[in-house]
Length: 161
Image 1 (cartoon, rainbow, N blue to C red):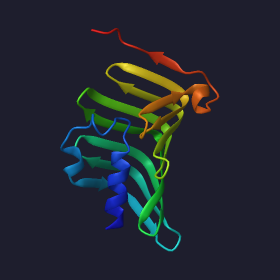
Image 2 (image 1 turned 180 degrees about the horizontal axis):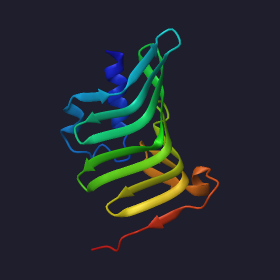
Image 3 (image 1 turned 180 degrees about the vertical axis):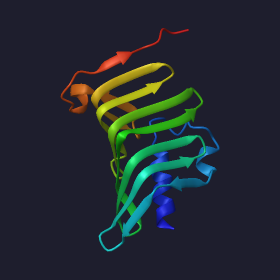
Image 4 (image 1 turned 120 degrees about the horizontal axis):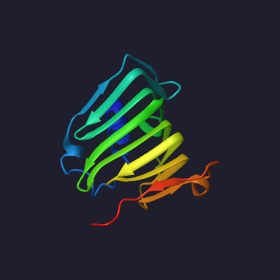
């Protein structure tokens, strides 16, 4: 039961705000496929390995490895690694896509941190940096030095219509 809860949370952490997500996504079943899973309840860690594919409605996360740390049955930290980790979600404003070598989500802070070859694209606008931080509460995105990255941030902004 608790695995379903943290999978829902993982999929819901997407880079789009809840208001932009398609209305039916949160009500859809979570589908998970992985080559293997190791669960250690005494240590509070679950690790999904190999072609991890998480889906809920229009949301999808693809990774090589997904590690979930939890206290009791509540997830506290979710880490996905891959070459790259890919996230996609349909929203009212179009498809949001993000990718990086690593994605960390602190449940309490509600921050998604994309590191190493990170990029985020929405409505044709793209941000690229070695580190991108998305604050789900404030709906803020920071890249490069503003996100404590070491490299510059690069943006491609489409002209208004």
